[in-house]
Length: 374
Ligand code: ZN
Ligand code: ZN
Ligand code: ZN
Image 1 (spheres, protein in one colour):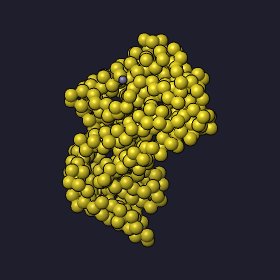
Image 2 (tube, protein in one colour; image 1 turned 90 degrees about the horizontal axis):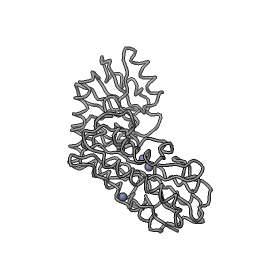
Image 3 (cartoon, rainbow, N blue to C red; image 1 turned 120 degrees about the vertical axis):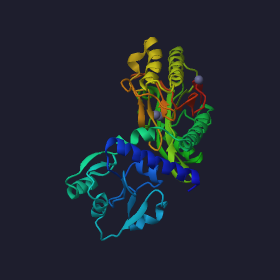
Image 4 (cartoon, rainbow, N blue to C red; image 1 turned 120 degrees about the horizontal axis):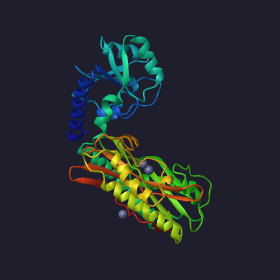
């Protein structure tokens, strides 16, 4: 682990402890989910054997981990001490012992209920809350190392988008599923360690925002929405996510397609421009939506404008009407309006954007225009 990543984790755990004291949480219990790698650099395996970081507001943190997985944990005495448990031990009792007399506990949102139920039986006086009540707002604000990781992931996705837009990745005559697989393979060729999704919606399927790519063969003169992303591995810790959407057309677009796309392009760029520190998250949604509304297409924009992104593909902050929390420098999120004419065709345009003191920075720089491809 480099010094920077280590220092960032130590700073995060200090912010977490300060927030725990503010909210009255006495111990944070982290197992599955992104909070644990964010704080420790270690991602627990999703297995029945319990891995749990016990982080008290007032004392030393301890990572309780199965003996056989202990060698994978990056040790750092400033962050936690390691407590490997043997196959014959009860890890729930080990965690309960570390919790001691503390009763205000927050547990990973993604912890398995089997583990939580066992802990509740062992700690009957405890009052439980979700770890996100402590971590979510903190994790939403990315430090410079995290922004750099998100930028690297975005640029890798951009290179795949550019190949798609250049017609380098043939569409006509192939099934959506084949194209989806190839988008995923290309993300990996550009350094991703994992592909989270590769949506390919062609023709009428382009009007279904979360279309599952299937056996439909892509024809000529069709709109194709491609939305893909994954995790770009970095040297010294868990990787950060990419998520990009580009819409292309296989042959010259009709006037209707061109006009709809022009509205979408304008809406997306207004949304990005509205991502100004201090303004409410909802204002990004409102900026994009007002363009689509003004064009008379508002009823076809059927989802929020964006979601936060980091170690998880969807996390705080959400850019949606009603979320009036202010944008902060370091917030990273998608801006992805879409217009979907049910049963006919649709389009979406998505970039990852970071709010900074000097204005919004789009991490994706792949071309925004409707590319005509083969
Ligand atoms: Zn997406
Ligand atoms: Zn997205
Ligand atoms: Zn543009």
